[in-house]
Amino acid sequence: MVHPALAASCVLIYKIYILMSALRPYLQAKSLGLFLICLCAWIVAGGIMLSLEEDRSLFRFFNGLHTPFLDRVMPALTTLGEGVFIVCALSALLLLKRYRNWRFFLLMAGCILTPFLVVQGLKNIFVAPRPIAYFDQASWIHIVEGQTVHRSLSFPSGHTAGIFSAICFFSFVLPRRYAPVIVILFLLGLAVGISRMYLAQHFFSDVYAGSLISVAVTLLVFSLLQRRLKVGL
Image (cartoon, rainbow, N blue to C red; front, side, top):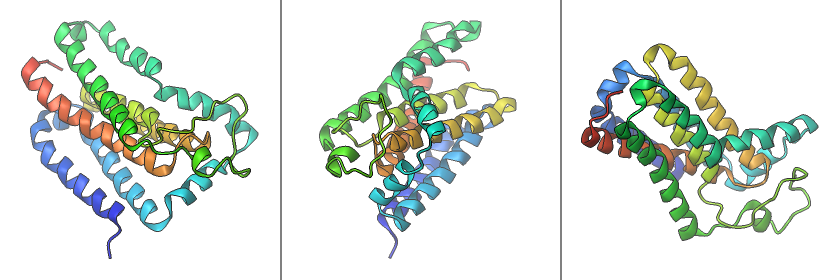
């Protein structure tokens, strides 16, 4: 019998394939194509991991990778998924003359704010416990000194959603010759997701869902707004 996570992954890949027809110009001229290849690989890999291991076991694995070096690196990595950093990174695009117009600004704002609102809405619908609350503050959970560990609103991961929606938007903007940069950014997005488990803030399913939901919403919003606003990229 096919595991639900793996089946859902296959369905999502098919939906992305359908949506690609509306985004064909960006697949040819921009870095979107390589981003979607990375995304499909992540969908399959994450689905397989969830089908072979329990979500809680995956959290325990990533949280248990702690070393003094990673205790310093992971808090810095996780800030890349925070709203302030994402807004500053995307605002840098406005320094380029071709993007300094209200149409591009509205497109960018819609592609970043909409996934944020969707994720925050889902958090308040599911009200899922964070690992520290789910395991009742078990002594084996590694907590990095100085980090505030939350207890509720675990699903989906907001930090992971934020960084992936930003990377998705960048893939629409970066010319195809810079496509390798998207691979680096994608790996950085995965590192942010891992940092959320390392810091005992989220389960694997929170990170997995956060990344996929944000990308799906960003792709949908971009395809709708770009046609209406007639933004030239």
